[in-house]
Image (cartoon, rainbow, N blue to C red):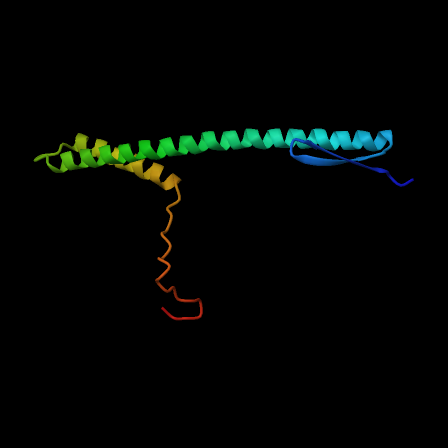
Length: 127
């Protein structure tokens, strides 16, 4: 039996449906598909919100890291201006620098790509 297409088009949640005469099982399947689409759209909205939250956290971490590195530099400058640095002070500062390096190593360093006007040698060319 061929489905009969009605001339009406309904717009729901940005999805266009054509009206057909269908069996109850076909309608049940289409309803299930429609419900899954709604769940998927809600899930994507939730994921987008979570990504925005994580992006804000990463930005905050970057700002805090910058302030921490500035403070470490200030301490290093103050240490350099000391006439006689005790072994305890030097050990404390060295421990701090080691911890800063450990945290820095957690983040992969990025390389700056060459400017567009600079030519980069191809794999076949010798440098």
